[in-house]
Length: 184
Image (cartoon, rainbow, N blue to C red; front, top):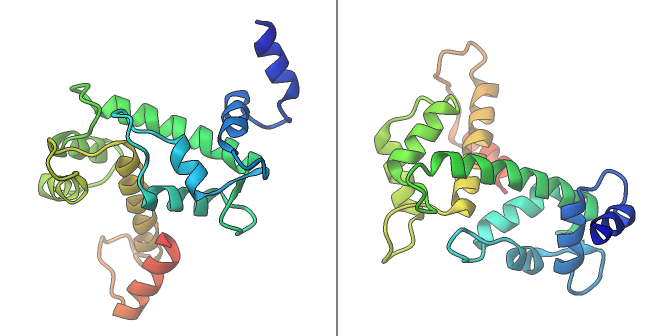
């Protein structure tokens, strides 16, 4: 109880106390920032594997307010809250409790999130991100990556689909420009 009170009294305003504690542990070089390698060591999947590089870089880009390739304490606190929401969704959709999302579970998740995509699409996504030699399924890191990229690409599509028909007409260069600015 005293340790918890002490932690909360040292936590800056607007920062999640748990995130503050993790930040202190993960910021191994004591720079006041979390870089890619520190973040990668901090985030683990249910099978204790570290998060993949692409997801870590995506999250750094999302929460790096200074565009320095690093996250400060406030960015890390926002990332912490973001991660907790995604972890809860992942656990909700991992209906068999396996620690990974199957094609069927991903399809159910995407339908509940409002996407009208085929079961074949979900299976293809899972196959693309399944680690070779293990049971088909995606871990938390890939689930976050897939859902975040799907949200980003859907937003880009909706910007072009002004009449809300589900169809857009755009040049290849417009498509690539949108994809690169949204995903990188």
